[in-house]
Image (cartoon, rainbow, N blue to C red; front, side):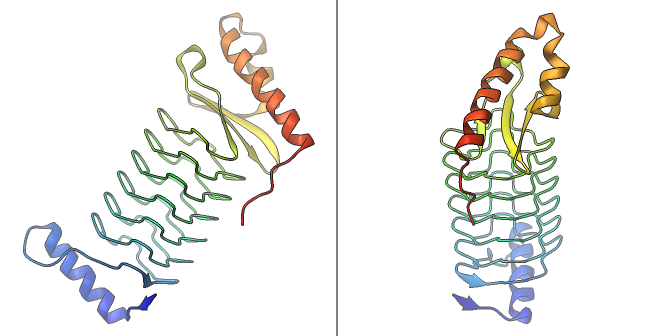
Length: 226
């Protein structure tokens, strides 16, 4: 892990900005850098190499990280509210407790990433690859998971596309929640909401399945990841 001074980081960002504009400069390579508690709000690191970087407690609100290589990065408890991470490589990254409220993670590679306790409220996860990701205790309220890959993901239940809508179940504060299409509800409220709609029997079947899974989990709860 290498330390980078504030002055050196400013120069790297300046050179990267020139590279993005095609005005010379140099693509930012911060591989294995120690950027704990770094202030990078609104920074443009699109396409940068941040593999293995320690960004614990860093402020990356509204930062531009599209197409960036963030594989194996440590973002524990970082703030990425409204950050742009479309097409970014976050495979194997530690995003435990990260605030990703309103972040754009469309088409992002999150294979094997640790998103336990992450705040994903309103996040865009369209076509994101969450294969084998850990979403235990993550908050997925109003998150868009349309066409996201959830095979092997922990802490979520893929309920398919009942009546053409993507449906996903998860646990928030120990209680089961679901998102069907654009509606996010606790499981109990969802069952009440759709129970009297004759044209939503397929949705009810998906909810019944999740209710059964939730009951089993209540008997044998998963251990939350650190």
